Figure 1: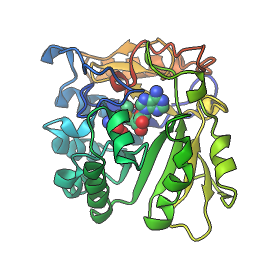
Figure 2 (figure 1 turned 180 degrees about the vertical axis):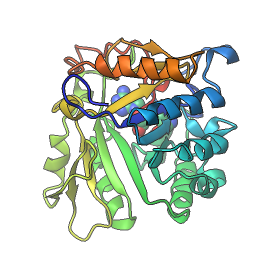
Figure 3 (figure 1 turned 30 degrees about the horizontal axis):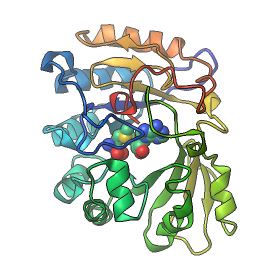
Length: 317
Ligand code: SAM
């Protein structure tokens, strides 16, 4: 479906759960999530119906995210069923990687073609700090499992945080010399109501280029990241700049929350409920959400907070 601004909406991100086995400081509160009644959340059959309705309107790429999608007990069945929906060409998944040693191969067999893994630092103490409870060695085991499982692509995502990991830009970028992965730097988005990051935490993507003078531009791969490559590298450097150079005019995505709210824009308060609707009802809501997709996400910086109304773990990154 083409929206009012001519954007072809082909990409749906589905948050499978608000819950996570980490507690990243920029993403969710330390105490985790409020317990919600089972019946308030989308169940597997409802999710598959939503994907069928979305596919009938032209969605062909699905990303499963969260929260942490791999904490869902039925994750493999969801992947298998979503991948089998007619019209779906690609099922991707975003994860912190902690559970990949058990699940990587089975996810691949279930039809997941690409993985994004979150990694903000290579320092074990800083990893424990930013995730509040994570161990870097568990991430490393997950990355190894991902690389061995034969995914078409593995990307690493680092949220760029001034005073925390801007001194690790070279070290993180050098992972592309060691492994066949893309390393992407994402500007920190001011989403949480209260966070501990001051104005200096909001570092523009241009800082990455200043630190990597040898990186040369390479053509985009259809995503929103600006791509560069270090000489001799096995993967690209990606720069994702929702703050300093937003890409709203190219935005081709919708988001579905774990409680069944369709969000046409990550940073807008607008939500359209599909919970409890049948195929035709869901299809109509998708059409409405696409037609009302905002032109852009508005100003975002340390002073202008996101209007999303939810933390990132409740939307799906
Ligand atoms: N648990 C999974 C993970 O860790 O990748 C998937 C969910 S997480 C919400 C998805 C992505 O959103 C991660 O790469 C995370 O770093 C990013 N993210 C969360 N909060 C963010 C923020 N405030 N600004 C920028 N990226 C954020």
